[in-house]
Structures are given as structure tokens and as C-alpha cells.
Length: 377
Image (cartoon, rainbow, N blue to C red; front, top):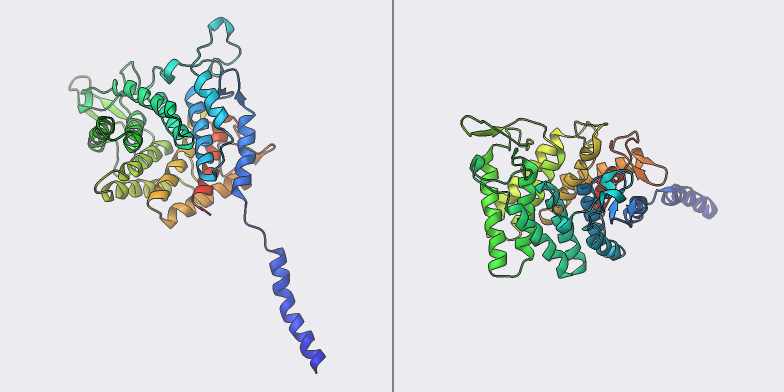
């Protein structure tokens, strides 16, 4: 009888032992992301400090991915890359020396160019570099860039900055970036006049943006404004609700909440935009898409990662299980359905793999870094 009982007990225990042995290990997102970063850095061009196969502003976002990876993991392995880009990408290569795609070969002194939104991306890249390195030169560069951006403000449409120095279009992304750079600098600048000026600019920009009409009835941000030449009135142009326009606003409001006496209105607005985006800009499986897919060109391929990066910033300040689930879903889809040889990722996160370049790679990596961030150890 004793032998029978022992055999019965063994039969009952064996299935649980087998299950424990065969249960899959949870994904190691730090290792996964490192592999993707290795692929991204294969496109890094020492000569310029920028990334081949993509544009100047996209390179700023690739640098931001390195910033964020170091921030969430504690690694400091890419600090030499930041320093090299800081020095090298300000050098303008003479036209006679340019080779191949001009986008790969042209720097810009002071990280300034014709487009205020391009400048904003570089300001955020250097704020991120400051956060992980503590080096004042990076924060100083961001402040210098912001000063140039502020020169784009005038009273057309009642305020706001122009998209470019040609002053033909007032749009969401330039003003959202102006807001988010102002809020980030207000958090980091020394107390006193410096901090006050960024605080004042942020308050001024947010008051204008909120009244501009670019936030539509669905809770999403349209691309920009139409200016009536006869009357000077400005109205929402009803153009595409790009994912990055939702994301940058979310991130700006989340950062603004850190220094506000009453953070609730900013966080409520950020959550409202986030909910509208994850509801209306995803497929049935919850994977994020832009309407340009699969042919998003050099700009649209960057957009989705920017959204997820900023959603993770909101999650860090005001956690919500919906945003964690969203990041889980999109990171998982990228890894299982949008991955090619060499851990390269494309522009369509639900697959199949298509349009692989440094822009699509860094955009996908924004999501993998966010996956690490929303599951802190």
C-alpha cells in the first residue's frame, strides 16, 4: 500500500514539475534592445556623428534613444557617441567633399537650421545627454537652441512659433516641441531668472496651443493651422493626426506637471490625448500605426517611436495599466513580427518587415526602451 501511495503522489507531482521546466522564460528586454542598438550603431557614421540612411532631425532622435537606454538601464556605454556627435555634427562639410546622400554628410553649427522643429529634436537630445552625463555643455546647447526657437514666435494666429524661418506655416509639432523643450529646461535650469523664463515661455505656449484649435473634437492633435490671408484668422486645417503629434504633447504635459503647483490638469489632458491615440490610431490587436504606412518616407518612419517614448514618460509620472499594456503589446509585436536579420526593424510594427533604415530602427527601439522603462526592476 505504501508503494502505491508513493507512485500515486509521484504521478500527481510530475505534471507540475514538467510544467515548471517547460514554462518559457520572460523576455529579457535589455538584451533584446542591446541587439537592436548594435544594429542601429552599424549605421553610425564617424565622419559626421550622424546616421546613414536617414535625415538630420532623425539622427537627433537616434541619439535620444541612446540617452534613454542609458537612463533606464544605468549603462554609460554610449557617452563617447554623444560626445563625438556633439563635436562632429556641428561641422558643415564643404559641398565639394560631400559624398552620396547629402543628408548623411551635412552638419549644422549650433544644431540650428531653417526648421524650428528640427532644432527642437536636437535640444531634447542634448537635454537627455545632460541627464545621463551631468555635463553642463549639453544643457547649455539645449538652452542656446531654445533661444533660437523663441525667435520664431510672433502674433500671427495670436502667437505660437512658425514651423520654419520662411514663416509660411504654423503647425503642431514645432509648437509642441517649443513647449516640451521649455518645460524640460524649466525643470533643469538653475533657480532664478533662467528657470523663470522657461516657466513663463511654457505657460505662454500652452495657453496659446490650447486655444489654437489644433486639438480636435476626437481629442487628437491635427497637423497645423490654415491662415486666411484676407482676415488673418487661423483654423485647424484638419490634416493628419500623426502619432508623434500626440506623443510630444503628452510628454510636454507630463514634464510640465513636475513643476506645477497643480499638476492634475496637465496630467488629465495628457491621459486624455493618450487614450484618444491608443483608441483611434491602433489596429484591432492594439498595434500603433500611422496612415502613411507602409510608405512613410524619411519622416513618417520616425513618428510612432516618439509617441511611445512620451507615453512611457507619462507612465513614469502618472502610472496607468493601460499604457503599460500598450507598450507590452507594441514591443512584443515589433520583436516577433517586425524583426529581420541582424535584429533590424521596419516601419510596420505588425509586420511584415519593410522599409528598414536608421529612422525605422530608432523608432522601434524607442518602444523596446519604453518596455524596459515600464517594467522597472
